[in-house]
Image (cartoon, rainbow, N blue to C red; front, side, top):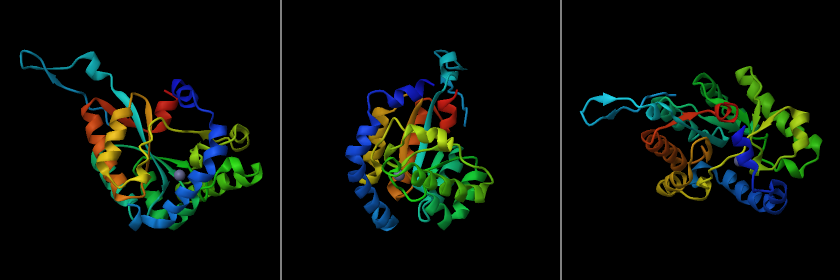
Length: 247
Ligand SMILES: [Zn+2]
């Protein structure tokens, strides 16, 4: 549970949601409306060569550092398919926080995510600041998204990433959802530079981090592949968020 405390330390999310929620909402709404055209486990052992030139394995090499990739706002009809192809090629499982309204548009992509072994979570039905709604309206947003996902997978999601990270703790009990935030946010939705996104993540990332990305643009998808390839070389292994939160 170390991760949960790290996520919350130093940030008064409620205050942030009140101050920033509206501004962020405007930006994200524009991002979502602009559409894709505009928006621009493996446990592989590290084998090192010793002085003798003979391949040997050290205990340190065997202790992999875990990190989780998460993708919000999907599925995206134009970009999620390419992302799923690349994740499959690399044998990597990610966590997708899905919008119910998007799930209904591209059910085949959600089916593929589920069949490929990714973890599916809730990101509300239509990307709203849940902390600004009445409890009843917020719960409806959560339930509608859960139902859309259940209709495809036959399983209700257990995890939620509330849009803008804005949640109310009483909703934990009323919805039984587990809130998942993030540690590393490269603001991929603000840039179409793959290099910038990759650089921001590599600069900040540490063991047991949860990385926030969006499968909503070509640059984010390509950046995700480069992040995986570069971090695997540094001894990281990619897991779904449940393995970080509860291991
Ligand atoms: Zn979002």
